[in-house]
Image 1: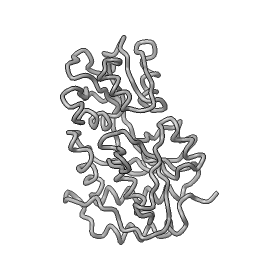
Image 2 (image 1 turned 45 degrees about the vertical axis):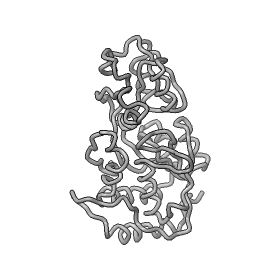
Image 3 (image 1 turned 60 degrees about the vertical axis):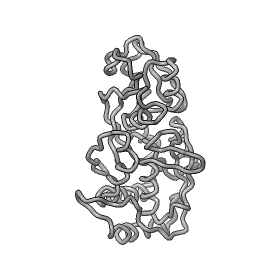
Length: 280
């Protein structure tokens, strides 16, 4: 089957990247998040989350966050303008099947690269490395990390590496409650129905900084895994993986990657790390 990205878009990608990014700054200088110009007629359906503040959040009909900035930049490098992107809300547990069925062309959804997932889909990236952590109530001094969770009830999202980590390492010691979204986990935490929420620190920091939760919840700050985010691509579509990797490399090298994080994630207080090596 042909790649879901048009041949015209793929052929124009290298030129779009080189010419479109020529005005961006590099090194330690400030840079614009503005992606390279795209005038193509190609389209993309991109699977994303809808309830992760600072990362991927839907408000009304608009989407915002670091993953949205990243996806928009990559699409433009493939000569697909922002207005030709269809954002497809997708549950974490359905990401592989959505790529396999063709429901989406790409998944940009804090999607950790793992050997198990690579049996079903391919990945471009990584474009960010986060760390699994814990979100707890502000006045809780009993939880300092995963080793202090014995007898506690923990909430995470089904189909994630976060839930799998807890199941594999703390089975029988922790009660794990799996739900479809992190926002549901956070509401359960505030209501006292669970003792902690576990997922990537990048996501947790966004929730903790929201007006409704600021001063109510806190991130423990004791990360215990490396979560290498990749962009999911249909299995066997090596041409798209190569084009997306080229776009991600330019995204980082141009300074736009850092500018996107400063715009979307840094306001939560999250310390922005160095970028990963794409293709590593």
